[in-house]
Amino acid sequence: MEMPLPEHMFDGMKDLRSTALRKRVSVNFAEVKQAGNISCPLLVILLVIAFCICFTVEASHCATNGFPLVRNISELPQDNYGRPGLSHTTVVGSLLHGTKEIEVWLQTFAPGSGTPIHRHSCEEVFVVLKGSGTLYLSTNSHPKHPGDAQEFPIFANSTFHIPVNDAHQVRNTNKHEDLQVLVIISRPPAKVFIYDDWFMPHTAARLKFPYYWDEECYQKPQVKDEL
Image (cartoon, rainbow, N blue to C red):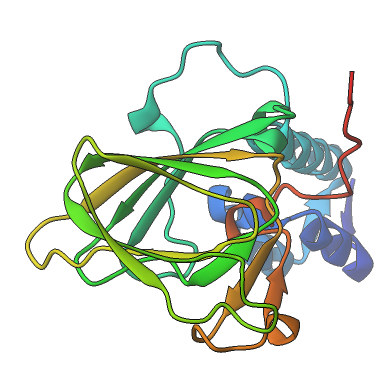
């Protein structure tokens, strides 16, 4: 027996497709809809598959368990998150792996690119793996805005740390080579305040939370276990 597929059923199936699912699944619901008629058993199968794929994709990307203990960094997801010249990989993170005290990133900046001017209420440690560039750092001493930043050359095998709430920026000022850094932050996920320039008032800084690479997996405030 065949019966027309109700219009609202297609809409419900479309609603299942999250941002992550749209990136990974190529099911064309419009083509199925255009067919107009579908048998009941096939309809049931399609619905079951849609639900299974939806929950499997979300769990595999954002779950805090089920990941192998030893992972190949080159096989981890990379993205620029809308920032030209950036390649970001979360090596281990609070939302992906359930860490409570630290998070580790691998970031590569193409020549001329870098981070925005920003600060955060956590400590941050950089290890420069390759390339060279410049660290711009303003100590948290001016009450109204970051103020003039000091410039520090950074290079392969160098390391530096950013104190809590000190405004800073890292840029690849080398015109011929990528800058690659390993970044460790405390108290993830990070709450980041972004500045347009070094004299923008602290009160005007824009809070970005969750941060770009946390947006897909962040759902609710994480309860911090102090024990």
